[in-house]
Image 1 (cartoon, rainbow, N blue to C red):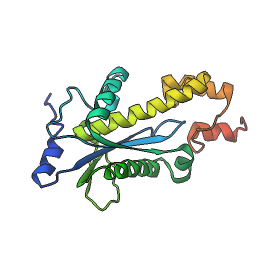
Image 2 (cartoon, rainbow, N blue to C red):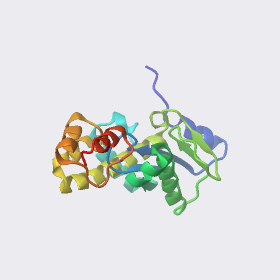
Image 3 (cartoon, rainbow, N blue to C red):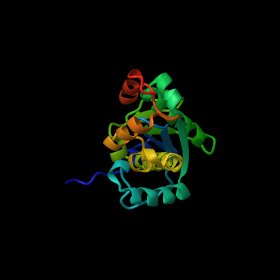
Image 4 (tube, helix red, strand yellow):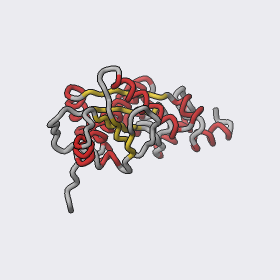
Length: 208
């Protein structure tokens, strides 16, 4: 199998004169519970982190290792959009908003010339390049995917400590069988996305 050059996009845009290249990705579109979280990252020149890839392809242990390294060695920003806003504007727009928040946080720290996004068009005053499956094609987007995913996971660990009966530390809010069983047994707590199918159905059946 041909090895993908994860810096192909970055190198191409550097050749075109772009210096400050940001990558952005989100985590948490699918869960029934909690926020959607995005990150924006600028990698330093000559950045190397062996094995860094799309966060979904990494083990939890690896993600935590990379998260620690990345947050100490890159410029990054994080954007968080809560469940209520997701219900109001839908998850697609909430994901875009989270990315904008993360990008703006980076722009408060340094200049940004161009954004590589994981398939998301974003209306900004700088070029945005949406790349399909970008987290598996761009090292900068992959780094953002790890920071977004681990940031969100950490938030769910905190919720799990308050509500261990739901098992958030295991399913992270996704609609697993055990999660749905916990909802049926314990009901809904603040943080659920009320427009999502299983939760909407639960409410319509008058179970809460």
